[in-house]
Amino acid sequence: MSVLAAIAVLAVLILVHELGHFIAARSQGIHVNRFSLGFGPILWKYQGKQTEYAVRAFPLGGFVGFPDDDPDSDIPPNDPNLLRNRPILDRAIVISAGVIANLIFAYFLLVSQVSFIGIPQATQPGVLIQQLAPQVSQVATDAGIQPGDVIIAANDTKFGTSPQEIQAFSQIIKSNPGKPIQLEIARGDEKLFLSVVPENKSTGGTVGVGLAPNGQLERRRVLNPVAVLNAGATEFQRLTTMILQGFGQLITNFGETSSQVASPVKIVEIGANIAQNDIGGLFTFAALISINLAIINILPLPALDGGQLAFLLIEGVRGRPLPLRVQENVMQTGFMLLVGLGLFLIVKDTLQLEWVQKLFQ
Image 1 (tube, helix red, strand yellow):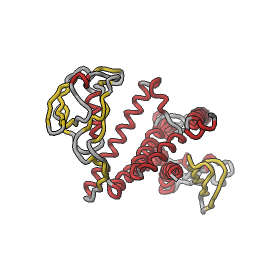
Image 2 (cartoon, rainbow, N blue to C red):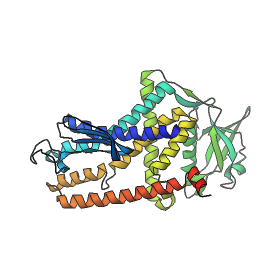
Image 3 (cartoon, rainbow, N blue to C red):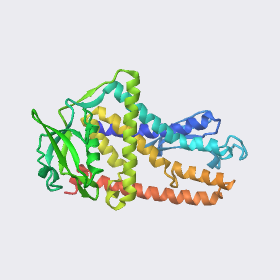
């Protein structure tokens, strides 16, 4: 059931993305002749007045079709409501609407989570030192830090009950290699003040500790409407920043981080585990994937929305579009590369699934 929930999440996010394109086109009077959720054989379809709506066999994808590219269309080539005949701004709105829809939907998911399920909060403030990791670094051990200690503050930054306090403390450590950090620590009823100098590693500063929330995690609903919107915006900003930093690391340290690139198979596995353990976390998972989908699609790569926007930018600068043959060759090449990468990742991640590995044992 949890696997179906994860697949349903991905299908909904793709549906939202394609609906963004569809609504942006139809609201401007632009012809749309196909709206499809999924790829492959058609399972169900409905022919509307202008548009064919279809659900296909493989739900991890979708598309909005325009009669511009349909040789069987009876719409005259010079019809002003064909997408290709519209001004650059109109076309840019249609192309970017999928990305915008995913971002808005991610924010809506986070606001819903805050309102109906609640935000995870630790029962006590601070960051717990769960264990020491001397094999990583001896800094914490040499400074006298012990398992069970609670970091109350670091460099005058106080830590509350949010699970994100762990990330905040980790960031202080990573961003201060070779520099002293003043720690306020609670050890039972005793309060200590220690100084640590993070060891400089390739990934930033480290002191050799394992961290955890202080106490049990409980979900607390936010009832004030203004506070709900603010909490949703804060979480949206945190997730977006985290994703952008991840993309930055992927670009700058591709050799070390390329193994972290995941296919839909891996994403479904992660989502299934989250759905099984914490239905509330499924909202954060869906928002995370929705923002990821938006950022990936806006990249200026062929066969993605960003690639089409790049063509529009070139057209605006040149005063005329690139030759259709050039655009088609670039898009087809990019599409084949993306399909090849996708198939490779799907096979790789499928072979790593536990039940698949058991088949070969």
